[in-house]
Image 1 (spheres, chains in turn green, purple):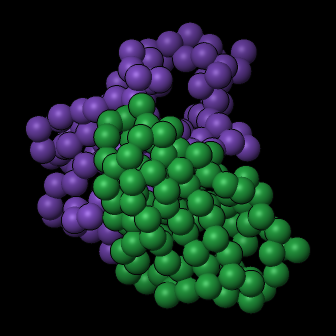
Image 2 (tube, rainbow over the protein chains, first blue to last red):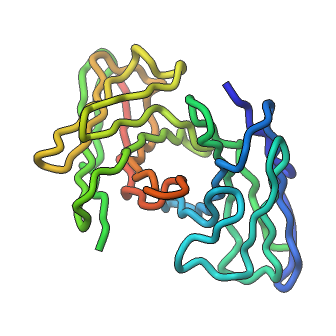
Length: 107
Length: 118
């Protein structure tokens, strides 16, 4: 199985901050990676697919990059609505696997 | 509007069987449907995925043999089934549609809370 490790686990930031979350894979693969946002009591929401493609309707302050074993999600200017938990997921190889999540908290 | 609507919350006893469902609407093409577990206060765990067109199914080794994923394309519904529940199966279960081009899970059900308690 490909293990996905996110860092940090928790991130404290202020509105307007630039935020970067990293996802590292235990094995190298191309760009079959997605990022999701989840708020308490809600289903996850797709933000980024194929490592860097922005899902329709997602604000352009979200961006993704990377390939191989290191991937990043960047929020260029953190907004109040962005305080949530973020997960990466690889779908290059079965079983698909998620990172453990990064909680973005208000500083 | 594309929607995945899941069946309602369930309260079961250990050893009982259970089937939960996920009905898709708002699209006509066939898409892979995945099931994802989220235990209380924890992260997301991929359980498996099914292609309703031919019922091709892939399981996570962590769930293989513990659950059965099935689908009825004629009614656009996917299922997740247990034959003998354990207390550790208590969780929220989500179904989600795999995006056609490029991948990722682009539409999610609202989640089904399963509580297993004696």
